Image (cartoon, rainbow, N blue to C red):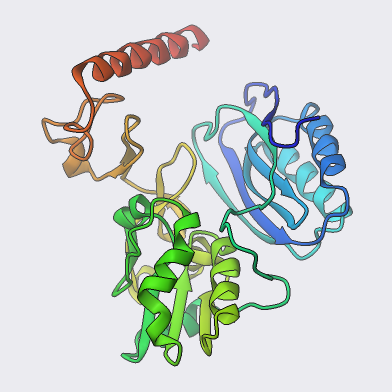
Length: 310
């Protein structure tokens, strides 16, 4: 089996209304990660599940969606496999949030590109209340470890945007922008917490003294923090059909430009530059007319396929 090739399993159409969405990860040494991948491939053939799970020697990471039964089955399977300390969060979606079920085998469950030890060397975890108290201080450097398009949808008040396109670029950002602040308090956050496991480990490895991160990430914060107590501004970009969520982990108003992937506010959707599946204000000048025609053809095929399923 090629360990780098994405493996697919078929997904049956959801029979009940609504989808349970489970985001999970755990850093845990997996002796035979290829065997675990194969077990998961066999399991997901038997249940109504969609989404992506990434398996590696260092653990498991992913977001899956299904009916209540399917989510309970996959959750119990992972517990039985020894993943009994997962960061695990559930939310809901009215529409099917993923097209397929994918089980991937990779070198890392979240790709930083440099060796770190997230199980042994990690920053101070803070719950939402402790987080609010810390980031309200003026002696704290608050860094959003997510990518530029995620930052655009929403972030914490006063957070720095590293302007990275992928997490792999984050070590270079640290080297160029944070190196001189090793004696400062550094607070970092991400969507579900997994990127901060590695980013805090990286900073501690590089000699930073006080490093903090939001336990459970933005999703946990939005789930537990009332809007009137929140320091979050905007919506939280998610990697499924909902585009973004807000307080209570409810689906937000942002929609995704399917040409470039950037989240768009209702005001940006109303601009003349927006054409569904073809262009938006952020990419209209970055593609040729020939490319736009290709996007229009793709969009018409998607619409036709949806009509056939009705």
